[in-house]
Structure formats: structure tokens, C-alpha cells
Length: 402
Image (tube, rainbow, N blue to C red; front, side):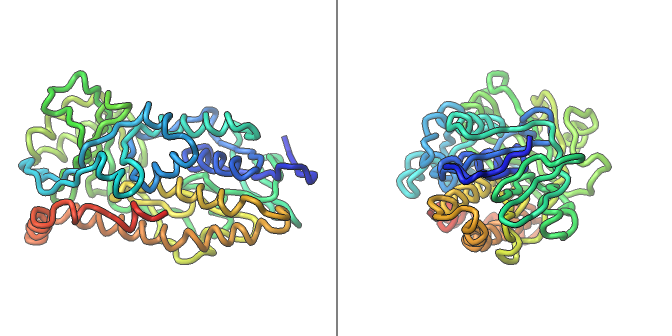
């Protein structure tokens, strides 16, 4: 399976990973004229979890890549982002989306299932040609040689290219070797996720908003996915990491959710009852990126969760992976001498990305603290939300950055 470059028209890039970041890398690299060898350890491609949100900073990239029409088929277009009280359901603040967001930022705000975005990127990469994807190949290490990189499996060399992109997620082996900075650590939060068919829900519950229900030491997020046919429900509570870090359809998980929501308003308890099954994830992350050398060294670069895992309190994990891929595509395009120029190009990518990624990581952490406030600080937060409305919820520095 080993591949090499003989100076032909399309220099090869090796990608470790098979998720959203890896396939976004494949799309961007193909647009820049690079052949891609992609290696995924699972025996099939899939995206675990449920829904995700994409702000205009991310959807603008998909539109630039010619994927706007495909996105509109699978996405939902929420009318607003709303903050409510977990305890009594009262509205605290509202940020209108829709045409106003497109007018301000040049692209829409959408919600969709992770698998739908994953499939969209896979199809775009395959349609471009020049991408070979290999399933069931676990990455063990890499070797950086003179003018090239080898990606190693358990027993042999998987591929050889001019550069390697580690897009293999939070527990990726590429970062482990590149930075040797230990494993990601639990944040003290548990995320419970469910999908509910909206046809089975009372009309009062099947709203088109993104709603964040804020409560002491926990919050709940709801929004439509699959073109609006399903409701994504996420409960994030503070708590200790269980022995099984991630699990799906566990009766104990459902019991934990019902207990967590017992002090909440009737609407949230009814939504939890309507969920056919639950998954539980232990949230883990790393400190914000401290410098460009944490995103690229030599012929190896990191992307997405492998580079800068995000807590979900700003809904930017997938968006940052798309931004990374778009920036990577820009630095890869038009290199006069790809073999010689690639390390400098990857260094530019890291220099252009690390501060923004670190800012989003830090803001996500801060939001988590704000969402879970209790006592007088919670009352102050709610007063500020009611007074300032959507101005407090909008993020121009994030959504407007091009």
C-alpha cells in the first residue's frame, strides 16, 4: 500500500483520521492540487454522537467549496438562539438568526447531524478524485525522513508522502508522538445525547430554535437536525468520569438523565421521556494552544481535535476543524517546489491558526462556567441576559472572521 512521489503533477499528502476534520482536509488538499492518502483505524467510516451547530464562519467555508446546495438538503436553519432557565423555562435572551445572520456575516447559521456533514465531505472529496481512503488501518507512529514522511501501522509502512496531517482526534497517535504532552484529561462534565423524531413530539416542543436551558451545575441544549425532522437533545452536567468513558443505549444512562433533570421545568422532563435512547460521553480536553509549534513541526501538522479539542460551550468544534482545513488548503496551494516548501507552508498554517484556536478554546471554557452558575452569580447572569438580549449572545469576532 505504500505510496511515494516521483515528481508528478500531484504531490501526496497523508492524513491520519477518518472524521470530519480528516475529510475536510481531503477536500481542501484536493482543491489545492494535492493527492491524498487517508487512513482510518475503524473498519467503517462513521461519526459518533448526534447533532452539531455550524456558525457562519464554518458555513461560509462550505459555500466557498461549492457545497452550499448539498448543505441545504441535510441541514436545518434555526430561527433564533434562545437562552432559557432550566428551572422554570422562562426566556432570558434571544438572538435572531435567519436572514439577519446572512446579511451580517455572509453565510447562514445551521444545525445538522454529524453523520450528514461527514457524508457531505466524503462525497465532495471522492467527487474531486485523487483521494484514496483506507479503512481498518491503525496508526502506530510516523517517521520523518529527508524530504518525506512515512506513516506506520502495527506491522508495516502504511504510506509515504511529502507531509502528514494528524486529524485523528482527541486520542490521536500523531499528536502523541509529535508533542509528547500526555493524554487529554476529563473536564468534570458528562454529556448525555439523544435524538427524538419530531413527528412523535407535541407541537409545543418541536420548535425551530437553538435553545440553551441554563441551570445550576448543568445546562441543556436543543435544536433541530436532519432537515428539521429530528430534535437533538444534549444534557451537560458536572460530574465525575465513569469507568466507561463513552457509552450508548445504556439503561443506567437514561436514569442518570432523569435524575439530573428532576429539578428542571416540565418541558425538559417531557423531552427526556420522549428520547428513545441515550448516549453518554465524558468530556475531555487540553489547555488552549500555547504557540504555533503545538500545531506543526517540520512535515507534520495537527488539525481539529488533535490540535485543539474544544469544550462544547461555544459550539465550535466542527467549525474550527473546517477553518483549519481551509487555512491548510490555502498554504498548500501553488507551492513552487512542494517537497522543499512544505515545512514552511505548514509553519505558516500553524502561525495563522494557533491564536484563533486558543481564543475559541478559552472562550468555550469561560462559557461553561457562565452556563453553570448558581446563587447570586446566576441571578446576575440572568439579569445581564435579559438586559442586553442578543447583543450578549452574538460573537462578531468569531462569526465575522474571514
